[in-house]
Image (tube, rainbow, N blue to C red):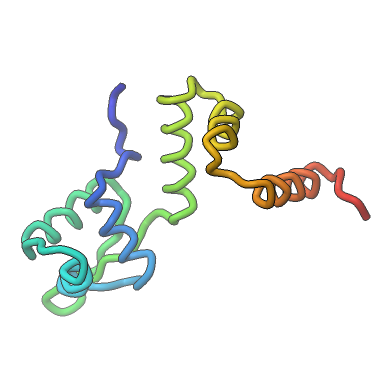
Amino acid sequence: MKKTTDDLTPLELEVMRILWQTGPTTVQEVHRQIQERRKLAYNTVQTMLTILHRKGKVKRVAVKRAYLYSPAVSHEKTAANAIRNLIDRLFGGSAESLVLNMVKSRQLNTEQLAELQAILEEDTGHGKS
């Protein structure tokens, strides 16, 4: 399957998580936060931010002699795209198959299923008043 610009590598996703948490920030700050989890060269972080900018996932603004990077896409939109791609690739486009798989593999428990049911009833107007 062809990769789209919506697909993020694990490292790009790690960088995006930092931006979603911190908001506008510098390469130095992103690098510092990544270093808390694993060793990564400053230039690698800078390259990742440049790639994310080219993909339209981050915005950057020049401030003095550095760029401030901020997310151009929300975590919610990114998650929705990743889920849609997962459903297409692994479940032939069937969200129902994904949910059934999660139930059968015990990744959703009874309490979570009841919560989903309540959300569905609320969204469709079939909730109890």
